[in-house]
Image (cartoon, rainbow, N blue to C red; front, side, top):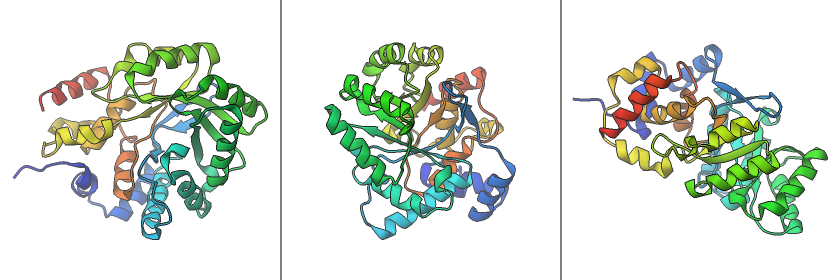
Length: 309
């Protein structure tokens, strides 16, 4: 019988079986002996773990104690593996408050990199929303605030630049999630010089390679990647499919790592933020930041194989 690799069994079948460790001992082994890939924020030279955590839908759990308990484990696993970046937004329901409540209970809360967004129109309304976000996330100073989907960006960019000067925030940025907005992101990068730009990019959705990555590189703008799994469609594509045998030679132990390692093989990617509400998926995601990162030849091989499925 062939071994089938899928997201739900990522660790049981791939990671743990490969090294013969229990779930907990694998985590301890990883934190002690392996170094998660890091990338540099161009505007400052600060080093950032290349894999973080998105909270769209996954952290919108309100006051559910059972779900919050599991999400706390997700945060612990992210940090255990060397991750720090948590990305949220007022658009994400209760996610900001859940992040704030859960991280406030962690001993490493001040070692994390907190990112959220402004998602409204009007200067004063935007200021009130950002202040509310900081209260919900329990931060007196936010690491990064981004303009969500470019909503009223000309207004908010002025506020964010002022806030950075006042040291209310460390960085500011802009975001979107569709190819058709890439040209707008580029124009804003050229004119306003944000510290970060967040956009969609995946093994099958590579429009950003046309010019957006190069523009970000030229203007010293860090890149955060959303939609790395294309809202789950990549996993549906490979459901029931066997991971190619050659993948393990490149430290690719699951389909999730296959997709993330491809993204990380682009040196212009600063950080990718897959969302999850499951600790073992968090472990699998972080595993993509370990070991060999595919070079140009392996990237082509990964692309070619995916086209055969």
